[in-house]
Length: 316
Image 1 (cartoon, rainbow, N blue to C red):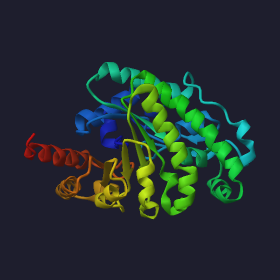
Image 2: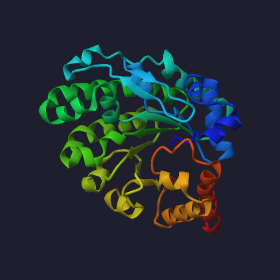
Image 3: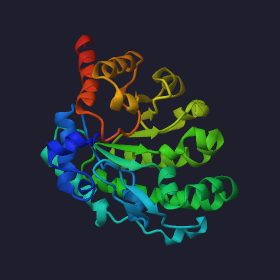
Image 4: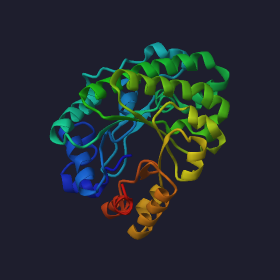
């Protein structure tokens, strides 16, 4: 998850919003998280607006302490899918991300590079007013499926470009597909099939694994989580690792340290919580969602400390 906190921006001399649009600055910032905060990977981009912007939405790139956001949707009606621009890996911030991955693979060849991709539901609801989108899930399924198909085609195009540039893992974050909003039946119809097309594609074409992150309370989804085709599933802080492992026993579990605790908590408390997650059997210890830019590097390091200490006590 995003680790580009302001303390690291200062250390890397690479700040938002410039780092969203400059490959070299993007690389410096993500490597600072890896080298100075103990994060065991390098991940880009730092936001979920790259795809929406490339497909026609207007985006405000934010400030040093705030993430980019969509300010004008690309389409106003569900039957306007044909107006969406196709993603071009050779233009705009899409190209910035692809170039950054190439630079990362040369600068830090031993560091795993995670390509962050917006999930299908989240991208669809960034291209059109979410109220119209969610209403259409019930009243206009045909056009929603058309939109989702177009969204997936473009996510494949962006993901392919990042994989060809050298990405080792694809992380698909779909916070808008939360079970609290969609419910079990809608999640089964509009989230799982499109997520699984992506994960299967990247596995079959490039041989690389995928992580899928779902925000909110996924407990209403129950065993549907096990139908997600990704190698790993990440959940929000309100869902225990024990519950995640019960719902998706065939997946690597990822999470789920509260981002509020990471920002506001004491390092020792964060380390203890990380240790509890490890004892519960989490496969990948990580924040439960994107963290606040105000989070202290010391607090991020405390998670690394918990992992390293756990490793030192495990006999191989």
